Amino acid sequence: MKRLMLKIGLGVVLAVLGTASTAWCDSFSLSLVSSGGGIFDYGITVPANTGVTFDINQTITLTGLSGVTSASVSGFLGFASGFAVSSFTSTSVTLVDTAFPFGVTNPNPVAVTLGDFLVDSTAPLGTVNWSGQTSVGTFSGTVGGPVATPEPETLSLLLAGMAALGSLCWSSRRKRLPTGSHRYLS
Image: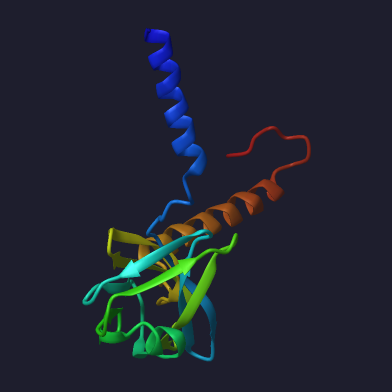
């Protein structure tokens, strides 16, 4: 009797798994589509065979930026999704879904990127942080974006200069020693 129940239970599990469709996995990432001329163009990337849903007032935020002078949403993200720039400073930009719950299903076997979220800055390309809320939680990561060129620390420059000076003194002193001498220091 136990064997029969085990076989029936195993059969039910296999039948359910065999007829299950692709599961909905609510996730996304933010991608840099292009950059040049002081304009950084971002898009929402939806993984293959999944989808994502943004509810009203959910946000996507870029932080760690530098020199941001403006930000805008156009194209698909502005028209079809209802996303708008909620706020921006010289170091961050926040988008918010203002119009209606917005979902994207990607039945394709490859990821799909939907843009245009534009950030204007004259800073060079580097790595910035992003985070975004969806109907199932918050996702985050890093993406290319405008960042300030780091200035070397004073102590690092001083240390490098001392190392170069020491190396130069040591090599000139070594050249002055007589041939065949095993002394490197006098």
